[in-house]
Length: 367
Image 1 (cartoon, rainbow, N blue to C red):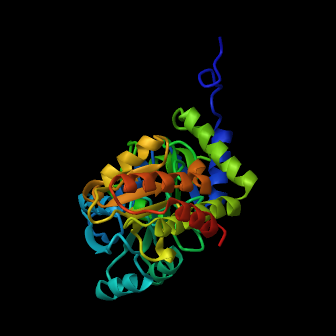
Image 2: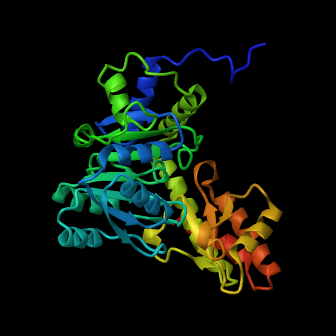
Image 3: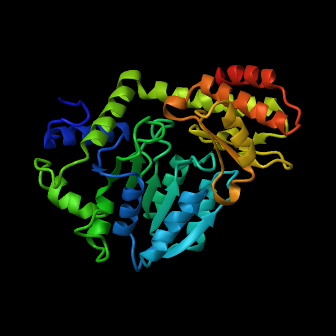
């Protein structure tokens, strides 16, 4: 008996290449795109280890936990790392990047996360890219959470290494990802004796055996289900229209922030300025006399399927995260989260107005 998920014909090189081309269009890039067979941490790490090493001076922007991880990888590669850390309730500015270059003109690599789903902020990549380009540094961008939720204009922003994954706003699985690579980035990798080769982390292997070879023979058997899912994600975005998908995420984010402000109970947006809030997740600061993890646990008793989570690590006691991305990027999902959080806050003995929060969420999503 055949099974639609098991008895699949082999994925051809031509189809693999066509998916790469569609991802390139999604990223508004003429650069090479390599689809990697794993969760986005694979190309995120592979790109850093390929392009950085002894002699690299990296400006690593930290606006959340992923920025911290990138700094660790860069140091492990032997790079000299200058961390530019900003409070997680805000975003980095182009002026801060400019000041870092003024103080350290030897910087030749900049790593940045576009949208931090873990902390709920988003960074002004267009303005930052202009500064980085002026100084000639290589620009590495984690756009895993932002792609599909807000503009990602790889070439216009001067991004040399842009990594995406399917599992956030694209609404797909976590097992497939991609990276666009500029000519400058390929040259940096080729000149780096420490760049991974004959390794799952190697981008140069893909360039040599796939891209430069005309994309006619796959170097190994691809993860078929994940590749087909990535193709379906891009196809769905193309059919609906990228602008419509981004608008849906923006409406959900606006609903979450407006509803949280109206809910009361001491709950407030963690990222203070609306302009610095990511469209994929709204983080909320728990009341000072309440534990965020406990509130989330109580809220999930109402509906275990709600996309609610406490902050990670040290933020677990103070941050609540409403993850409105992919299929959950709807006002109805946000309203459900607000109602459940209202019940949890009331259980804690705090005064809330759930009806006001639901009205504010609906009205806020229309602005």
